[in-house]
Image (cartoon, rainbow, N blue to C red; front, side):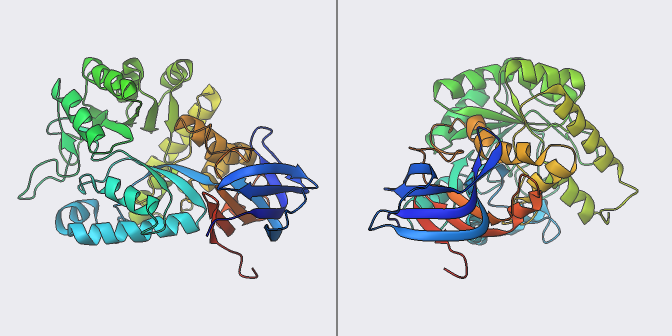
Length: 401
């Protein structure tokens, strides 16, 4: 339920200063943040929520999820797309939404339904209507892949059931169709494997991508591009996209191009970590080549000064464990306070929502989460969620409340 609340944690995270403020409280009225600061008095009709030992944060944002996927060590991606029924996949997505929200993630960007067509639009509507609990969703519909370059393959079905195939001028038509079906963001696969076992190679030309970017921007949508190879990333930069996902083979030169063009990287460290563990790695040394290479590209990105967003490719691993990406980002070299900022205000800016969410400031939506401890000094505090509010409604209360 919504109402008027005075929330009194041990500290409030100030995203602009990248630090916590002890003794601050937050007043919520009419689904918005009405006041924040020291010595706030509780209105007579306000419910006071005392959250000792906790840090209050803006609602967390995962910039790369797949709500219609579940961990690959349960069922392979191919079999999820081909063999799981549409009804089962939607039911799983509903459960994923609840787990995501309970983990403190009040907004997500779903970058492709992977064979579930435009079901993200219906799921988003169900959440908005209060039919099911879940985060705010920015959906990308099916995503667009180059003709012949995606999967699943080797089945008696269409070659690209996991996304919409298009090339050349047909890419603009596909983007228009997906936006008309409810897409909030356009996603392109800038590189991929042409056949199983091959390395990724750039699939779209700059000249193919640029009209899609122009169309999407004219429609008020941003463009995300899956790109692991340096060449796929380079082409995406030249096409003027908004974010590049993964960037596993990114070089200092291409990260500098991204920085200068104002294009953000969402590195998805957690997906690489999870897939490598599914293949038998125990998380200790010696590291597999995939992990060593991912660490190197992430380090190069940090050193370049490119804007880095937080999105784990959640769905490759368990929904509700979304903070896994933030933990790895800190463990691999980003200061914890910077990670928390990227997870909130940074992601909001990347998604174009900085005037609505991402900071605890007067007039912002009352998306709030409290964690036990201080994540600016102990990033794993993000995994200890005690309280969640979305749009002024309390959806998770401390056990003592």
